[in-house]
Image (cartoon, rainbow, N blue to C red; front, side, top):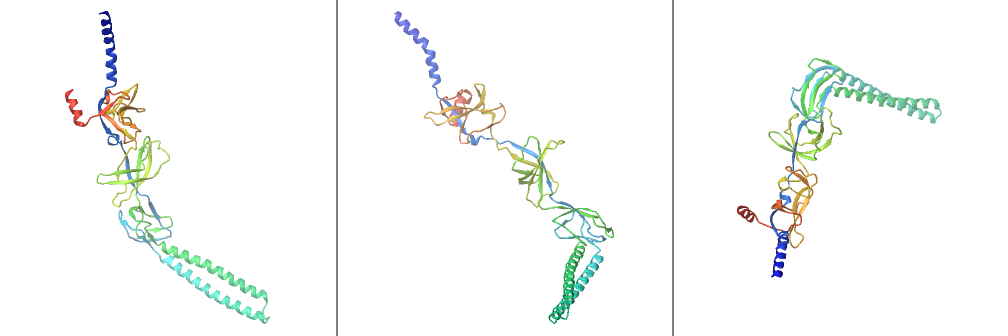
Length: 350
């Protein structure tokens, strides 16, 4: 009888250990989802404005009177269009004079060549000195040099004629008129201001904590545009604490000075905080380990994780995250996967 009582007592004391062993080997039911379907990408914005690459103030290159103005304010013009015409009578007259001087030099050169040819013939009969022949050669060489200089003077006079017509340097819009018909202008007198409508750029102001992305979407009230980073300023302005960058934007329906916002997404892989758990003083997520015969839960700690916020991870996107039943899991717990109906059924029963 005493022996039987001793066996019963021993069995009673071992029951908790047996229960704990059963509990530890219990397979827990969970629901999983590929991380690729749960990944979040945070969206950022920064103010942006359409900027013209070229903005030019055109000046007179000669002294003359303004005869014609062939544009109106805000008129769109094409490259090569004549915008302002100056009185060209003096440059044209000077051009004729220079042309006449060149013609006279050609005649003098022809005469000098004939003299040198005749002198060389007389030399055969020894009827002329070598000194005189050398003088004829020197005279011809000087005339040829004078002809080169005269051609340059003629080219300069042609430039003055070309400067009588102030032309658009590129496709653009006239934004300011700085002279009037009848005004006597001199070199460096301002005539007009033009801004380019080709090859526009987008200027974006980032705050000091933002890194300019390589690509983004520029959004206006009516349309979205794909843009690509071209260059970034090397410094942050002290007044606005902003860093500026320029983006290439290809479109013919943009308005210079138009404002909008650049939108882009973070490249970081992030997960929602609702699946975050704390184990051994660390926050992290439970992943499904399918490598063994029996599937287990694998605790993946996340550095600097913050509860209630999305957290950046570095986990392959094909791994599966445990999204149901993760609250009661421990590292290396054995698990089996429930489908959606089973999870809902167990939830209703509980």
